[in-house]
Image (cartoon, rainbow, N blue to C red; front, side):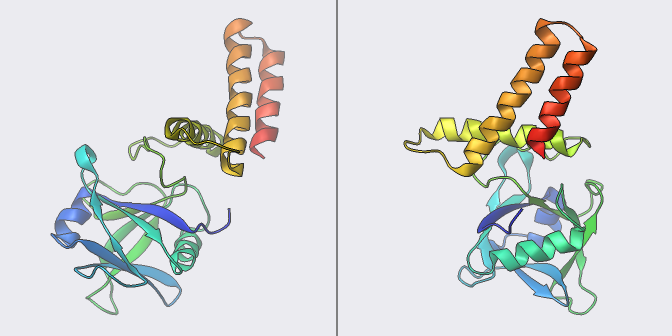
Length: 204
């Protein structure tokens, strides 16, 4: 996936309470090949992004956009070793205690540890689940595709759908055929195998 023009990060409740406090924005920067973060009261700047509360979920979220967004995205992805569900724990930077270092984690850190999560899906899609357990990438792609299609339909947009929406519709069509094979015919091993191979090809 190419670096996006904008993307979303979420910050858990411990981060909001122990690090952010009442400050209304975060600042991100690349430093010695890594990305680090700090809360700020600034509202303008190429690396300053306002934060919003996440409602019942607790914590905060921010949309990272602008000319520096691609560099921040690339730095986070490189730190995590590739795309997926990148989680980062947050702790004071050893070189400068006015900043907080981000350390990639293989899964969501314990709930009491301040943490940031990078979202790889569209920024305008609702329904992402921080608490979802581990699942294969093809399952996450189906979930994302369903949310992209739902968001597009909800928006009532007129005109030709984007490439992202078209690809999401294709994925959902394959998934629906798989469901039909399993529910209408019963568990037919050959049908399941054909549907799985079709799904795998569609997901690439």
